[in-house]
Image (cartoon, rainbow, N blue to C red; front, side, top):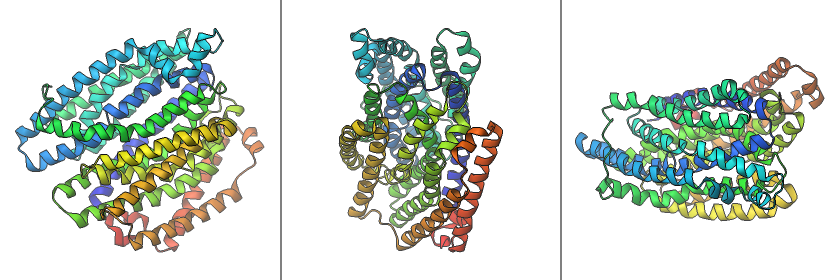
Length: 523
């Protein structure tokens, strides 16, 4: 069990790593082109709204409802029935998302006013910031159709994941990054408003991602003609599961949009600083947390369908240990190396030392919640795989309301940094409730060996932190160095930190490379 999961997780992590590296290159190009000024704020805003809906219609709520049902069909139904389900889901989802896309393009000024309240208010009162509202409305018309393409891309990815073809869907986001980078280098510089060129890149990225998936669907004999099927039993089951899942997945997305709404009233650059910090957070979260959560969901679904209770618990425990092993050092490393990483990756062109300072505060705040974000990715499938979407929704709503309260309390004294702190606090609350619910239902409880494993990872992480703090150069030295020197020193710190962590884990009796051999081999 663990060997197969580890192999699948490694594949997803490797593909995601490539995508995230290109994502960082994309953000470096954007930072060089626009920095953290008004244009950057507007682009990130126009990109965030379709991404919010993507989480609902695509890989978020839809995948959490679709994967367990498709797994059940593949395990217990005929091939013809499974293909019929795919056709009906594709047609039904297609009609819905087409309608939403058309409305989104037409109503872009309304959506901009709703989520960018500060800009809309400035536009109403003929203030300079009102130009952001007009530009954002235009750019949203260009980026919104991305939702249509990425929805079908996610549908294809979910089908491939249930059949163990994790690499394809994990690699697909690479093409979005390539499209945006291409637009930033060759299209944006020739335009009066470079940010519009980036919006066109987002649109083209959606098209290419979908086209890339089609041959793999055909090879799996899953390329079917879409058909309307609102009342098909499988579709009914999926939409029944998806409705509460929509609220569950939307919790974190609504929190992000709320952050954007509040940030639109704050100083120029707030949205951009939060974005750059979030991008660095997403790097370890995507490579480790999302990758492990991706491979765990189909595995848990199969064990639930086949009534393998012990296997279900063992899979959950494997996921928690994997998150602890990778998440603990990633979280503390991200916090300690926040400024150096921002300097190396983004400090060039229009992105200045002030932007490094401001973004680093948000990164430290976000980074403190990394382990919680990662745990949510592993604990939530414990519900979705059992086709229980209501319980995590209830917890998610509590976390969302709490986040709103945290925002209101922390935004006044801490500004945009308070928004990041609030997001991390709500993630911790959400992860805690998810675990408590699994424990209360008798579905999963952390084993004693996992508790010991946590203590060992904590000890090794403390040793890593002490080493990094001892070796860390002064900030002025980072500023004096050339980009090549900064990069070399940063890589040295990361390498030494990883070496100390790994060495301490071995001293503590843990063999990280045997994570794929089962829980007992970890010590």
